Length: 251
Picture 1: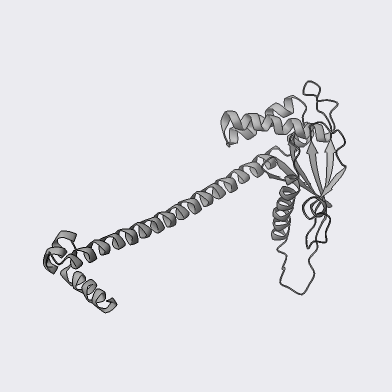
Picture 2 (picture 1 turned 60 degrees about the vertical axis):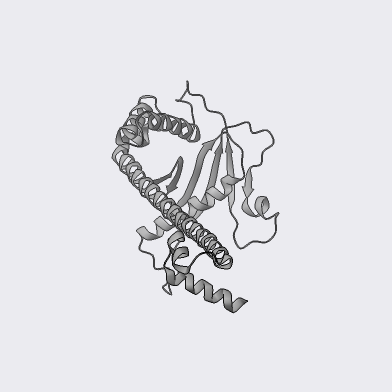
């Protein structure tokens, strides 16, 4: 079994590919869109690891896919599954569709021995989030999460048998997050520079228009020579002559 994490979400890859959404107490249909993105990322990784040739004539093999969202809020009359087509396209035919199965339940932090795998997962993510808050996205946060969970019998068997794999996986994700942060920061910087250049050009055009209007008024008054106007406006005399010639053509 291989585990992949995206933020607070995990994908278990075995015979099936199962993606479990992060525990959430907020009910929102946007979880369907997030699930779509997660499955896209996980399938890309699955195919890359197998060096699958998507442009070749041979059909690639894909794992069966199941998507789950664990909702830890009040179930009330919420559905067993939700779909992209129904929630976002009013059940109209669409080129894409996603079906997400909902898991409901309440966890008991004081009683971990009796928790099922879903409940233990919720507790694991809570411990993990707390350690990230204390130590940041560091190896210490990961190791402390594992230590605390093992001591509290949360996913104990899995964590004890695959501790190094979990540490390596989660640190790799930190690196990916950092790369993404750098990319986003770079895109923002480039966008800001473009906006600044655009504003500068706009200001230059406005100043140019204002200066030309002033030169035209001085030329019409006939009180100053071309050289005097050029000196007053701090522009080349040739520019003043050019404006004068254009004014004569327009007259």
